[in-house]
Length: 174
Picture (spheres, rainbow, N blue to C red):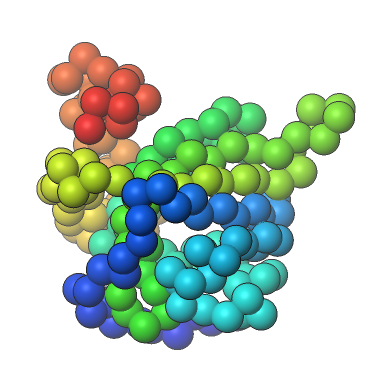
C-alpha cells in the first residue's frame, strides 16, 4: 500500500499533558489496536488505522536513524523511550514521548509491540528539535537511505560518546 504524500502544515494538534496515546502492532508494525486519542490526533478513522502500518504517521522531519534504533531495541526484546514527531492525515503534527516495548508470549517470544505516549514539554521539544534537524540533514546528504541512516546513527553515537551518556541517559536528561 503506497502512502499518499501529505504536506506538513506546521500546525500542532493539541492534546493534554494527562492524556495517554496507546497503540499495539504486530511483528511487522501493522496496527492491531489504537486508542481513541491516537485516532483523534492522527486524523484517520479507526478503519483506516487498524491493519495499517504504524509508519503511516511518520513525519518527514523525523530522523529515520531514531526509528532504526527503536526497531533494533524492541527486536532485541528491550524497551526504548524516544521523542517522536508524528504527521496527522491533514498535515498537522504532534510530538510524543514514546515508550515502546515488545509484547511477549508465555515462552518469551516477541508477538507484537506496545507503545504508550505522552505529551513532552515545550522545553523538551525545543531541546530535541535541533538534534533531529541535524540527524535528518545528515540522512539527506547521502544518496542511499541506508547510508544516510547509518551516517546519522554514527553522528548520534558520537554525540552521546562526547557527552559521556548512553542513549537512555540522554533521553531522560532532555
